[in-house]
Amino acid sequence: MNVSPNLLPLSDPGQAPTTGGWRLDHSYAQLPSVFHAPVAPTSVAEPRLVIFNRRLAETLGLEAATLTRPENAAWFAGNSLPPGASPLAQAYAGHQYGRFVMLGDGRALLLGEQLTPHGERFDIQLKGSGPTPFSRRGDGRAALGPMLREYLISEAMHAFGIPTTRSLAVTASGEAVYRDTPLPGAVLTRVAASHLRVGTFEWAAACGEPDAIRVVADYTIQRHYPKLCGEEQPYLALLHAVMHRQASLVARWQGVGFIHGVMNTDNMALSGETIDYGPCAFMDTYQPATVFSSIDHQGRYAYANQPAIAHWNLSRFASTLLPLLHPDADAALALANDALKTFPHTFRAQWLLEMRAKFGLFNEEMDDAELIESLLTCLQEHGADFTNTFRDLSADALPDCPLAGRATFQTWHARWQDRLKRQPQPLEEARGLMRRHNPAFIPRNHKVEEALAAATVQGDLSVLEQLLEVLAHPYDYTSNRPEFSTPRAPSAGIYRTFCGT
Ligand code: AMP
Ligand code: MG
Image (tube, rainbow, N blue to C red; front, side, top):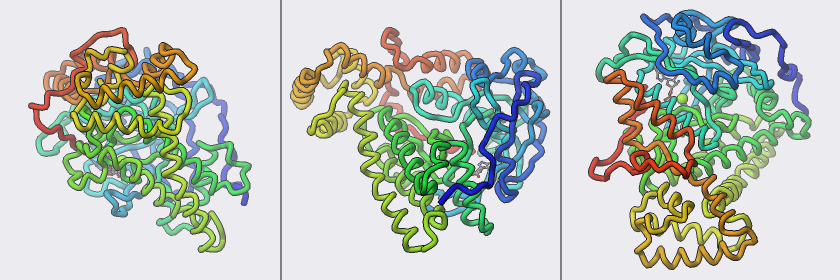
């Protein structure tokens, strides 16, 4: 089966940048109309840039000096459109907590795809920009706190080197949004390799247009997996490739203790980027059952469940691809199932890759998984901090490690030292590897809350900016900032996060 010629390969149409460096293209808009709805953004009362990501703007070919002029805050609030923008809301469906729903951008719109000086293409999306045809009962708006939270955590993820959507700006709207109480409103400018999701395919499969799934599959291949174009079975190859990126992504999350919190299929990006920072948070003490989201009563999206949930979501993805895999339904199902069966193994391999680096291991030995798991068990038994334990091991600062006095840890440590000595690389190189994979700083929950409270209640952005600066260099072992690496006091009670919609 060859990729059908639904779309020409994505190419740079070559138009010159306009004011501010905007070079917006619209490849997604060429998909059939079931995939999008045009939207006129609704103006807000008083757009004002709260935070702007200069470094990101530069990599996008955008001129920070122009974009940050007060009058241009209108571009980031939907009060006016940047040159070349053509706003639309994307259609998608999704399984939310296992239940199928037709969704779509209910509070977001795509301005277009910025073509960068490096020949890349990134979606520029406004989130919180007002009602769309997909808003259902929602107001289409977002509150400042959650949008700053997305900005902060997504930029931290990027600094870890974990694939993620980025945040270009947060703009205050000058209007209140009403949740339980009135809150300051804001719009986030999100930058993504694309906003294609598992849910986009679920929409295509459910929308009743016979060719929709093939068209969006071809588009996804062209946009994110162009090497698969020539494959004999491009759609099966797509399934494998998406599975591989998700395995790798979730392994990276596990490595830094990141809990996404709402791994619904509409929040799983086909590019392999982390997307939708709602109730996410980082685990302090190593407890695999950790859940932060206030609505996740069953622990569906707990830390330890993330790989299995990724697998489940991928099975939803695979089922949308069935008509493309084989003309015979049973044969298609067999192909999909055979592919899906490989996920646990693929994930385990990615997890071991991540973990070996965290433990300073360059080569492979049979007992590595057991060595790794026995430290994790020890952390769990003693309620030790996940990040700081690995930081202390990486810094060779054992006396600082609260586990140092524990007999089980001492036995483990001696075993680990022997293992390190059995590899050809000297200890110093192993520590270097560890320091590149074990962050010294993560967004600590109380520091995040403190920064957001200062920004939203007092209007003081300096606390957030300072935290962003620390998190821009998470592997900086030369900086000793205990106030940023001490976990939240257990006496503060259970930490809970909210969707923030
Ligand atoms: P999320 O929980 O952010 O992944 O959103 C799930 C779905 O709810 C998506 O279709 C969103 O567009 C929609 N949604 C979330 N918040 C709002 C809102 N305030 N107004 C309209 N739609 C919303
Ligand atoms: Mg979402």
